[in-house]
Amino acid sequence: MPSEGEQQFREASMYLRPRSLDEALDALATTGAQILAGGTDVFPALGDRPQTRPFLDITALPELRGIGLEPDHVRIGATTTWTEIARADLPSGFDALRAAAREVGSLQIQNRGTIAGNLCNASPAADGVPPLLALEAEVELTSRTGRRRLPLREFISGYRRTERREDEIVTAVFVPRAMTDARSAFLKLGARRYLVISIVMVAAMLRTDEAGRIDAARVAVGSCSAVAQRLPALEAALVGRPAAPGIGSAVTAAHLAPLSPIDDVRATGAYRADAAQTLVARALEACVHERAKEAA
Image 1 (cartoon, helix red, strand yellow):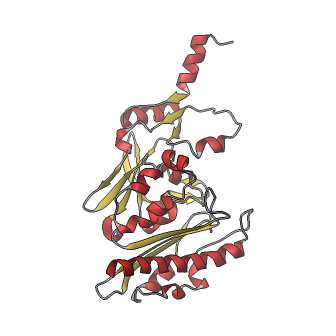
Image 2: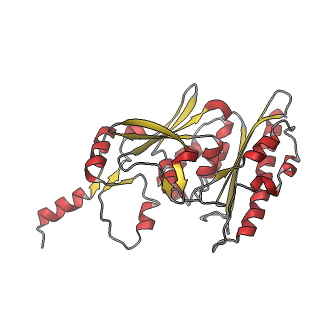
Image 3: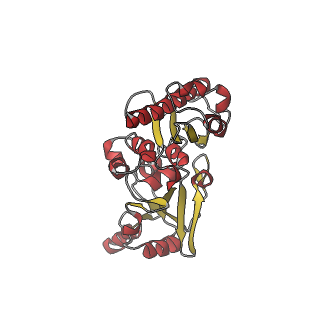
């Protein structure tokens, strides 16, 4: 039986809370620890199983927190919480992301859960992914050997799989400023209004020219495939159309071809496909409505 001192040492070595990024990267490289950013996904997934690796809590690292607006991009630190995102003063292109932030679990989860944790969990139903895909976000990964960036569409490589290496920490999410002044909307369908895993969720963005015609469109759908997907055929079909009420009628079933909805306990694949088309149409209408309100 271990002594009291040995037991305290063992417990301390199972929970590491570094105060700098360099310290965190050294600890990750030498201990093979499991990164802990908020714990809102990690602990439920652990269930009754004992934790066999040390936790590396990165929430004390100042380099990983906050939102910065730069001339060519917006930087969101990895441990920025959903509450902070929902309350942030951001351009209209982020309205969809801010709306998604208010849909992540309960208020307690939003206060604790982080943007990087949501992405690294790589759930098909991760609320943050569709709006970030529409924003063409990039994920910054840092290790002792350097930094690299991956487009979010490449970072999440499959069902609960990412391209993060074992020696890397996600340190930030970068969003180009090209579409940040567009109109955007996020819609989520679940079995109830709050505290629900989505059946379908949609993020849409529309940018218009001086004549009021759409010159760029982005639409992403989650919970209808192993990884949330953009709808490039629909995006192309929207360009050149007037940004006016009725835009939702442009959406057809063929535009949803990249999706692969499945049957599960929440809905059938057929229901998801039908609901996705409806939500995409409604999200586009919401973007047009917001533009009309601003022009009035």
